[in-house]
Amino acid sequence: MGEIITEAGEQPKLTLLQELERAAEENMSGLRVLQNTQEIEAAIESKPTRTYSRRGFLKWAGALTVATAFGNVLRQKVRGEEKPSVPSILERWPREIIETNSEELVKILEFDPRTFGFEPFLQVKNSKGRYIVHIGQIHPRPDSESQITDTERVARTQKNIEDILEKGKFEAIFAEGLCEEDKEILQYFKEVKETMFDPIPPDPKAWQELATAYYQVKEKIQGTEGKSWLVVLNYIMIEKIKSLENYFAANPSQMNPEEQDLFNRGYETSKELEEHIEDKDFYSSLGTGLKLFIDVKAEIYPAETLKENLQAFEAFDEYQRVSRLTEKTHHSKSVTGVQNELAKESDNYDKQIITDREEVALKLISQHPSFPAIGNFALIYGAAHDFSQEVEKFNLETPDQSIGLIYLAPLTY
Image (cartoon, rainbow, N blue to C red; front, side):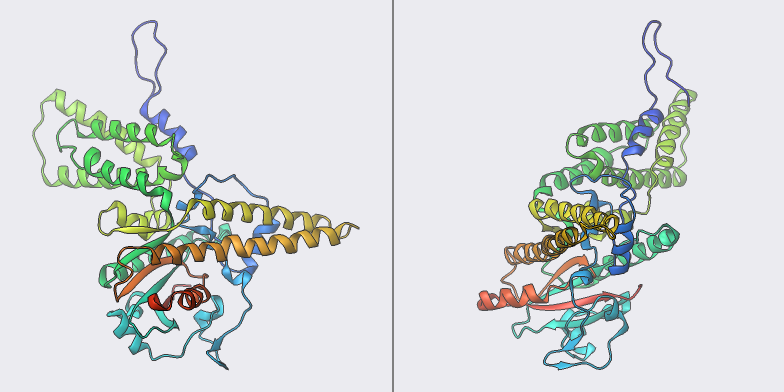
């Protein structure tokens, strides 16, 4: 588009497109989840390509799922006895289950998850009829060769989760990747969509008003970790562009030359902005929980807190550092000391990335006002996580508020 013509003596201003190039550099990319031990080992051997912001995993929708399987023994039991054969889906995400007829679980859920590509398993039974329904979500893998395919599978699984949440009856819905401390900015984005974007009238000034609103919000969120939240703004922007395009296509109007010129210039700016938003697969980048919240289709509650969120990132980063150091000193005299450090970091990794976050999720669910109700509570969380130990511990400590656990395993992997 070139630079904007200014008055004589003034410095030329950046065009909206040039300004957007800066935003593109901030857009979320590159962080991908590690789904099993082999992928963790591969990631450890490779050098990190970028640093992370506090909630970089809003891009990977809670990507610190990073393979609970790494911290678990690969075992599969039916309560009290060894099970000779393992359902194939549980070979990837092993856990203890109670042998139960699937139709019984369908009655508890009041829908058949197999219709949406999920296999149900009962992990903790509850006679009161109160259950956490852990809906296992998956994330793109870090290897570039399978990135496109994985992204497609992730998007398909997230869409299936959306269908489950719309079909099922849940007392409340909780999502990995959202922190208690995010409530204020989440509400802000809901208001942005309703008060800054949706009221834009479909007239010749619409496209320019849309671009202006985009940059106003972008400037405001830059002070609140804009890198993490830019993907949300981009999603709202893309949806509004689609809405206006559909309206103008269905309702062509007569404009005078001045209005037509204003319309064309604004449309050009908005479309160039759209082209520079690299990641338009918002099912994958936002995750179902956040997407539904922004769409005002469901009330979604955080399943994490900032403290544990930060600790998980730090533990993952430290584990990678020590692992790379172990590789470098493999044949040196210092290998024993480094391996001892690695063992220590492995314990921290398991605790801070897995156990602590699972305990927080269960605590937030149990503190929700609707928790005393008899019914199902949806928990969108990484498929590798296993909440059975946390649920059993909670039931021992608070038997009057006991809850069961049903795991929905995604069949797309």
